[in-house]
Length: 420
Image (cartoon, rainbow, N blue to C red; front, side):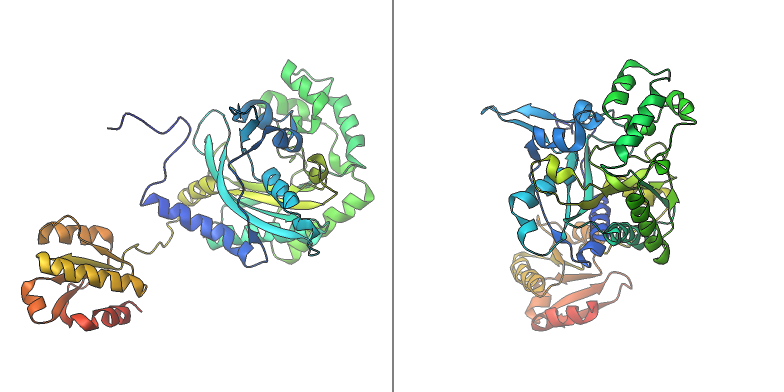
């Protein structure tokens, strides 16, 4: 056993399970790539102030969970705890919003880091696929992103998820609600830390999962009663577009999400088969984030879907993805001459687009055939001195057991035909 192990709260992706994660990432991003979203990749760490300003200093992510450090040069950096702030920073830095084609539509996939108590579905290192539409205030854009996520989950075969939807208002109507909510919360029996949150970001108290807090929230003022006419109309249009598209959702008046930058539309995808860590993805509109991090006014909307939790959701529903074998042909040489000839044929097959592997290490026929079985290859190519003397190799169908002699010069074409 190795002296070292993966850090607490992290995991290694290794075959064959890693193939499922790759397939999930592909499925989550496919609708985006088909809808005008271009790929973006940002650094794994950023200026710590980027997240403090954007995500919010009062959030658990920034105050408790962020991996922050100081470099030898004195820079204060943090491993990225989420993707939106980084993507918007990159878009602003590259002046993508000045290209004259708004919204700027971007998607990304990568690892994120939060220091929190590890449990199933909650890791210190996790993977997400995300999407951001930057620079347009349009309810159709909010609806588009929700619909694309719904399509992605359904393409994977998932049916046990629900979409929760809410509106958080805007800079006109939310301050009025904030004041009313603070007045209500100040009269509750709350611990000191929660009381501090009441003063800094009272909406996040609504998202507190502790039963002793939730019991006291009965009768709390609801944001829907404070929405201005513009926010009401915007939210109704999002709801109407989702309904017209046949996407079912549930109104959730307490849904606030855990980041400070959200405005108006907010949504979450939850799966009831995952226990306490039921959220598999979520997002919303963040019209003021660009200004928070020093950019111009750029109303935007986006989401992030958890790859890890999507895999857990598939397991909860008993869904096994149809993942093709990584190897179609496995070559087994018997003797040094056959080794040289078959290695050349393997290279030709790979150039022709046939997924091919080779029995390395000079193993005997029995051991090599066991490896061929484990590889999942449909066909095995075996050659010895006698076969090569006659200009042939033996091709065995691993499903039927049938075997035929094929001229060396015809091997690539024959196998391409069989695998077509």
